[in-house]
Image (cartoon, rainbow, N blue to C red):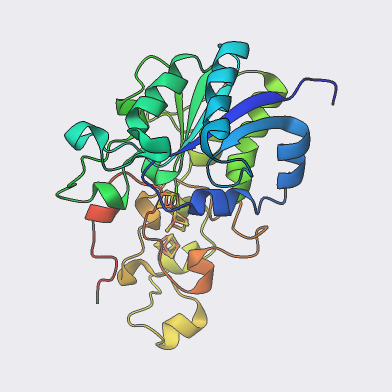
Length: 265
Ligand code: SF4
Ligand code: SF4
Ligand code: F3S
């Protein structure tokens, strides 16, 4: 409570804004406590009231007054083709804004699968050359928090860890915080006993579906997907895709968008 709030600059490139939609629903900690007491969210295209030149001027101000101190949070990614003209926030290529702000940041957080891997806008043939953040920012730690979107409490949990311990969370070889991405959905899935027993849903709404059997034969990607959905859950832990009767589509994995089909039948 006595620590100064850490400045956070939150940039938006090619994306759909649902990572922010997820973030603002965090319950533990409450997002209002994160934004009002833990960080100083000095810039966020989506949720700030300011706009225009005055808003853009904040970026330069933070760079000068908090050099090497602020966290750069990035939602979405830069398209590199044709000089970056396919994403022009504030009238200039997003890639320029990103590299400028990354240069003086303490660390960079790549929110979601867009920033971490490229996501649907990078789907083959990737016409705008949408490129994940770590391929553009190469001289700073980039903490990947993938998912489409990531779980709200995973996002605020990563921030809380960084602010509380004043260090980066331990990352796996892909740059994901181990505390949330060390296990596969399949490892902690409550339908796992059915998988082990060979009890599968064979078609939508069959007897097995009504009994909550394993969704592997319906294309569930839980066995190859690293995320916290089966432990942390969504909407304050109320549910997650598999609990709602739908297999995991692997939304936190690299290239999930090109690894279809999502439905086997
Ligand atoms: Fe939207 Fe998914 Fe990209 Fe987040 S990762 S901005 S939810 S498309
Ligand atoms: Fe694994 Fe998916 Fe079956 Fe769960 S529903 S046990 S994650 S294959
Ligand atoms: Fe995504 Fe699979 Fe979780 S689709 S939301 S990683 S269960």
